[in-house]
Image (cartoon, rainbow, N blue to C red; front, side, top):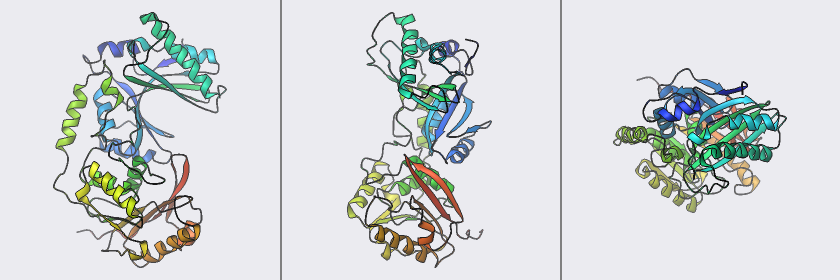
Length: 399
C-alpha cells in the first residue's frame, strides 16, 4: 500500500479522537466550471488562506468547525467534501486496494446507508459503473472486518462516497453536504429552465452589484437572482435553513454546527432594506417568485411585478441589471426572443451608468443586443453551456 496517500492523518486516528481533539482534514469545496474564483473569494472572506485551486474545486486544511462554516456560508460552491485518500489506479486491483486501505469501519456504522458516486476522465478505468462496483466491494469488504455480516441493510444515516479518476489517479472523498448546496430549502416551486441558486450567487458576485445599489431583473422567472441578492444584502447564511449529512453522523460532534448556526442567526442584518426589483410577463411565475422569496424570509425585500419588458423603465442612475432571459426552448418563439435581446440593447444604451449582465446560450446575443460585451464568461447551468455577457457601466462617484 505504499502508493496510497491517506490525506492529512491516518484515518483511524482521526475518527478515534473526533469530539475530543479537533483534527485537521483536507476540505474540498467544489464548484461549477467557471465559478472557482467566486468560491475562492468567499473562502478568503470567511478567513481562510493557503487555498489550492483546481478545475472545479478549492481545497484547504481545516477542522470540523470549518466543515460547518463552509456548509452554512458558501454561496456559489456546490459541495463540501473531505478528501480521504489519493492513489494511482490504472487497474481495478489498484482501485480496490486503494479504497480498501481506508478505515471505513471507523466511519460507516453497521446500518450506514452508503453509496458510491464515480466519475472518470482520461483514465484507463473508463467505465464509471465498473469503478463504482469495485469501490463498493472494497468498502463492504473493509466493513466486514468489523461487522461480520454478509448483507448491509443501509437503513441508517447517509454517507455519499465519491471516487473520481483523472489521468489514472483516484481521489476518494466523503460528501459532508449530502444534498448539493444549491438546495437552500427556500425554492418550493420552480418555473421552466430553473437557474441553480449557486450559479445565481456566483454571477451576482461577478457583477458590479453591492447591497447599496439597485438591482433589476426584468425576466426574473422564479426570482432566483433577486432572492439570492436579498440573502446577501441581509447577510443571511444560505445554508441556515437546511440540513446536512454530516450533522447526522454519530461520530461527528454536533456542537460546532449548533454554535455556528446560532452565530449565523445573530449576524443577520434585519434592519437593512435593499432595493431589488423583478418583473416578468408571466403572472404565474411572478407568483412562484413571491412564494420562494417568502420561504427564504426575504419577501419584504423584493418588489415583484407582472409586466412586459417594453414597460420596464430604469428608475435611477448607477443601477445593475442581472437577468437570465429566455433562450433555446424556454419560452416563446425565436423571433420574439431575438426582438427582446434588441430591446435590451436599446434600453441600456440610453444610460451608460447602468451595468447589465445577461446569461444566455444564444450565440448571436451580442449582434442582437447591438454591442459587443466587455467580457464574456463561459459557464454551465447543469449540463447546459451558457455565456455571461457583461456590460459594466460607469461606477458611482465616491462620496
